[in-house]
Length: 611
Image 1 (cartoon, rainbow, N blue to C red):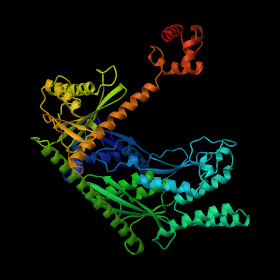
Image 2: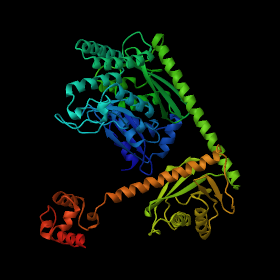
Image 3: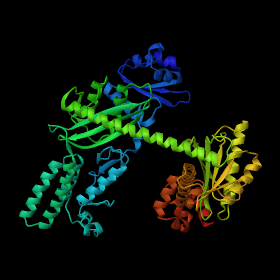
């Protein structure tokens, strides 16, 4: 259906619309209370459109829409689709998929405390998201020291009587696997862990002091001493928490700043009137995006993954969609949520303090990016002048070989463009010319021949473009003089005028064509750092591919190579006989007895495994 025809048949109902480009990629996801009015507005007079909308409309080749029952449902669906597709023109959290959580596996009989990167609907309790994986690691370790919770992955069932591990003997676990603690007592400890993670430390301390007194009265002095130590550790943490409110409500305080295409939102977590923690989040946004749109996008993306929605969220300015966002937050919390923009007093001061912190984070990030860019530019300049290259290094490629005693030989090609990794242009190769034992020289010759032959064919139009037509300004070979010489032979055979260098790992020596003595750059040289980084990245990319192939080969089976034996029949055979060895020993009549194995398949299988 043509775009104009779709526009003419848009329904006047709430829903979500997905804009696509010529390649069929989703470039924007939006929501509307009236799809017909909202979507058509993009294609009307462009005089009042922002530069962002004008650029978006120029790239729209197709659209889809999904009707919902309400605007709240549209908001939820819009957020899910943005996370799934990461459209170019939508505002999105930077690296939002990698934010860590603390997970308490209350869906297990005897729960654990672990750090995870993904929040699932599995019945467990999640706390976060956090921006620092290191902070999550420290918190998990602290909790495991404070509370004797198991760390093993055993599927512990009631009545289990395994032998307890070392953690039990050093007081780090109550050994539920050995039946030394009942489920109710263990559950009380997990409740204490959750209270701590919720920021209810004072309530937890009060409960623990009660248990300590009770243990003393019962003459359980060791238990009382252990609880005393827990209380002291918790009190140390509580002392560091700043009192920022005169009430005891739960609040999230949001501060917002922006610089060009990068925005920062700082969140302060206030629980029972005390500041218990803070996190900052960065958002990619277009220069034309308005502040209201950016902060609204953050609230939707953050709270859809957050483990807790407070009663009140303090904002630096009013949102145009505060009503619908408030309704959505209330569906998450299952109770009233207030979005408040304070104008004066204690709350306004708090918002301003959080905004100041957001500004400091953004300034630090910008300074870090500028410093990194200067280091990259310095490194490229040093390499160009050290190697006496006629042109600046815009594109650099590095190659590495990985194998295990000549088996599963692979090669990697990684690319830096203007000193930064271009991951979409990385390539992997399975080496075909080396069959008997390891031979890195021949393997490297093969990958260079294949890469540049393919590039020449793409340039001449003989083959379809696969990203090999762009030639580098510099090629780095992982290895010394021998590896470099072997690849120069192939380069010269192909008639390519590209400088090649080799980097020997032991002393980080750079070998250059035509020079007998290697170049040794100073240890603090940015040029050395750059070649080391691309060499290490090539090694990482090669070894990751090699391990994947090696793992696949080790999990393979002789049954995989037999025509007519698919995954279903393979599973049935292994279930029936228990092992490949017993399948080899079976007669045809025994093979036919297996579900799904016909006379013909049984005969082919019999001949193959016996051969």
